[in-house]
Image (cartoon, rainbow, N blue to C red):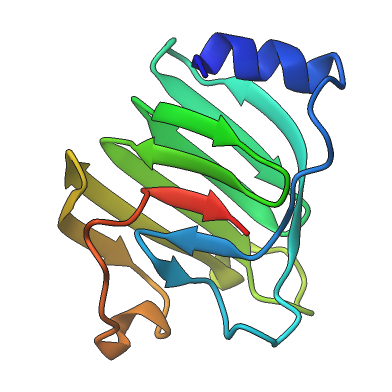
Length: 138
């Protein structure tokens, strides 16, 4: 699905609720059964037509050059993106710049080139499955 069609269909409520666990290149945000579930609240273009911004109830996901958007009965996936930035605030804390966290993935095709973060969870040496989709909601 093309990015513009996805945005239009979401805004016109032609797309069912998108809710579930977030995955970045096969890496789950949180543990499988820890209740870390997110609902997509809004969708918009960024400053350029190549940037897609997805606002979830727990954070904001920005994707540069997203390709291969697919929506099924129990999944939402984006096969590739040249850059992905996930931003959120620490859970249960006041939303300040001091407790804002981010993950930034830069990739070429489906291979991660670099990861930048200020979050200890991602710094812990987690393994990625590079053949997986750039982003998924399951």
